[in-house]
Length: 330
Ligand SMILES: Nc1ncnc2c1ncn2[C@@H]1O[C@H](COP(=O)(O)OP(=O)(O)OP(=O)(O)O)[C@@H](O)[C@H]1O
Image (cartoon, rainbow, N blue to C red; front, side):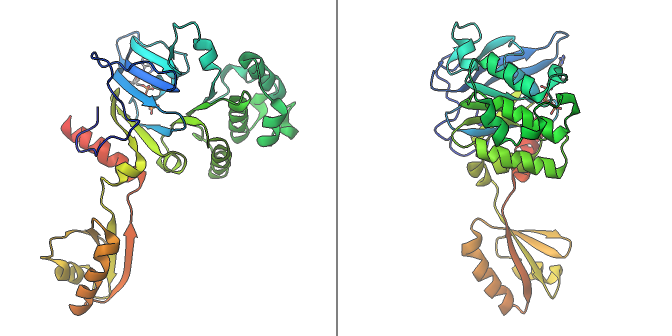
């Protein structure tokens, strides 16, 4: 399952415990997808033998290009869809198991929209959720998410940002151990997006999280691991820090004498150079170790460097690297 070129798998990486590729069910694993295939009526195959586990306390993002199967996977995990084959389990229990409903009560779900509940007031909706979960502290979430002034407001009358706040509050009413977040900031303006991130930062620590998003900055800010899907398959499941080691940082250099002279002075040193407008990018394994010698060499060669900046790869760079490499192989 580890994509070509990936480094050693972390401890929680997918382990194939059963010979047929399925994972052995484990009550200590909050979210588990084992050899799941989903074919929609009409024949579209959205997921193809997908397996991964999200460990307790892991905060993972679910990434992938359009049509990769992310929404399908989230809907399978929420129980809204059934797999065509394979097993989705929460705390080791599959949908057919008698304790599945109990396991589901340990999972809070933040959907993209309030769906069919638009006509309920904020209070009605939170009470409905508390009744469904059989427990919960409404005043606590109303306070935590600043919903006090809106309690008698119909959900349809709330702004997009406020609806999202309510969705998060509802997901947390029962103090779940797991949070499933389906694009929590899609369609929100930057102010509302920041507000959602602030709330999420408060509630995510200590919980297991799977965050489906297209916003890679959001994923990077909130999660420490990534599951990348493409065309219904898992390309990788890895720590973001480990992923980052796959791409070298870049030293961005600018000199008074211009990029040609800079590149000329660095030629023949076994470095990978790329020219970006008036800068030269040097790919380095260890910027702190290599930059001082490089700058001394340039100064000695009569090149006056006025900018030397280390750029570490972003999750976007990593995503493009992983998905691009997979596209090239396809
Ligand atoms: N209800 C459905 N009936 C038939 N095909 C579907 C249905 N829902 C999704 N699909 C197809 O399944 C595949 C995966 O779709 P899915 O929505 O899960 O991907 P996604 O990664 O969430 O995409 P996006 O990022 O664009 O939201 C796509 O080819 C899509 O067209």
